[in-house]
Length: 147
Image (tube, rainbow, N blue to C red; front, side, top):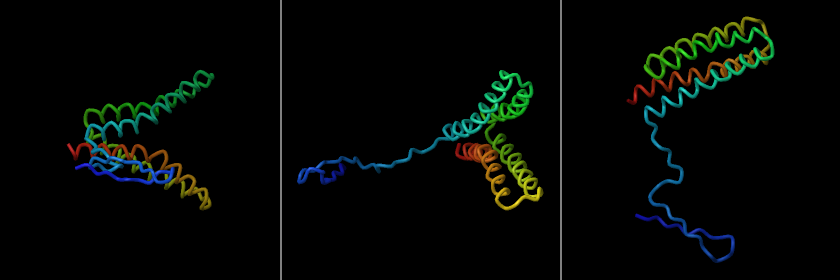
């Protein structure tokens, strides 16, 4: 059925007719497992690209230690390949390793004897660093559960 709403216009007595064919104006499409998997892979590609850009830029600038970024990017490549072929395994791996690393990060931060503001700043940085891989792991598990 056609839902017609008459809205007052800004020009006085004229009306604007808006047609809404039974749909909500803010309809969210249903996410398929493939879409969920793609979103999680994008969450993993972003830090990978950042690490590669940092490594290349440092090496172009003459700093040989830029190669360390390539070493840090290697596990992300392995996880990306695993995520594409085996999403549940990669999701579990990301959740277990990411949670462990975040916990270790927070223990190290708290044990350094900093004041509350510094601890909160480091905790926030830890969530920013470890949050996307944890979210990607959760999404990969959801993609596998839905399919």
